[in-house]
Image 1 (cartoon, rainbow, N blue to C red):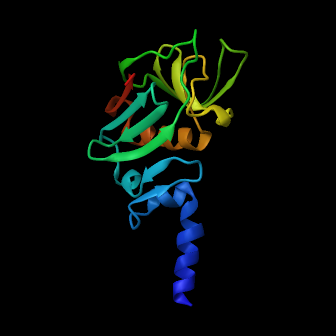
Image 2 (image 1 turned 90 degrees about the vertical axis):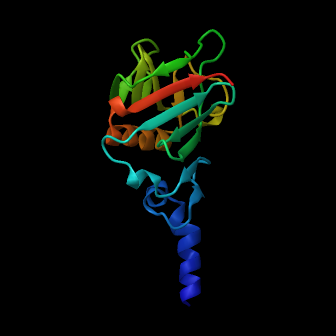
Length: 168
């Protein structure tokens, strides 16, 4: 009976990102939205720790690391033709749980981390285009991933976070 309970917990209970970020027993998990998490990494970060967010525009992917290991990898959408996403090294300049674009018809931008002028990393409802170029220049994520990232940056601090955008 105990084996059955452990199996049920392992199969169903660990599938939520909230539990995955709390556990350190299983090493690395695939989250519900297809992203990967290095389990236990988030709980070990604290104010003053360093965080690196690297967006590879060529592969439409984001890697979040804590200086020792990769904490998360996410699919993203960056700028489509005519709306390029800037490359370079940045730091977050402001954060908003919810922002509405003044340039694009009040489009909602949940969990926004602005890193260069009006460019931000934020959640999107256009999930079918994650992993493909599709935005007006921002870096778009699944909203649950955007919230995880937002909370992580908030936890370590904007001054301890680097945002790097590259083309591989």
